[in-house]
Length: 134
Length: 134
Length: 134
View 1 (tube, rainbow over the protein chains, first blue to last red):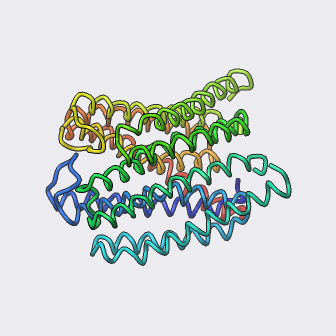
View 2 (cartoon, one colour):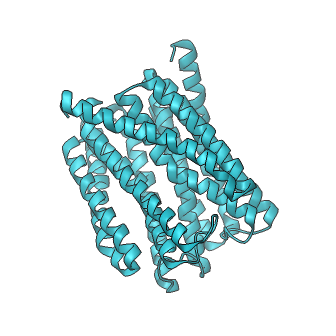
């Protein structure tokens, strides 16, 4: 596994970025005075919550695609595209909390990064199965 | 890893099915005219949203169980049961958006597929630990 | 992979714990009489739902960190800390449904377990990259 240390490192950095969004939700909850289990009733809390959950939605798409890309194709390319995903997600979350209309740029960056990883891995796996045999 | 190309392929097809449900949410949001961060207020949006999130809930159960089944037991069986899961999920999502009462058939299919993978992997891992040693 | 059977076993036990929380949501929904797709309107349903979803939020942080810890460092330590996570999550979910104020102890236990796994894996991977080379 040691040859995949770069992708493992990017994985943990992505998880820390996601954890930071969870902290933002806790902070927004504290400021709003809205007690759990409610997640609505304050604009900043709702935006921080949805930014966090949208990232949760995309984590399986991103992490699984990045690892399959790395395992079946190229470790360094997977890690580099993974860094682009993290940058997109940070722009997305900070944009969303400021104004829901400002979440688009970061969203499109992470979407493009995920698409490269998912369709890159898909194409390579089909190629491997056709040439080498499943 | 190339011997697991079949399970990797089914994994990416499952993620594409899940991504398609996310597109349905976006489309329902557009039609409803309800702006983010709200996720309620329109029946079709709420159904599409819950179908997507229920699938997100089950992704770790399904994907992790399928991979452990493949790694510790049988690659082809894991991939075949994974295809059943995808079919169940498509039926579930289309049924749910039409009428929440129509989500049961697809739900039970994906539940059965997940149970086979999870308990199959669990039984095999306990067997491996007992016979070969952890 | 057979050398990681212990971590695989803890992974499946964690998924079964998470599945049990999903059953609690179904039971609370039945008692409340609130039909899908709604997830609010009854305190017990809302608490069971949020306990389940908070665990979903943390599953990628926990599972990925435990596996990277096991793959790059120590299998038995990863599995032992994983058991602590499961205990914390059971205390969290039972506490939350009884009273949202009682969710803290279990939450802090699972937070500590996740932090050990995540930062342990992160430190080890950086060490591996520095000494062995990525």
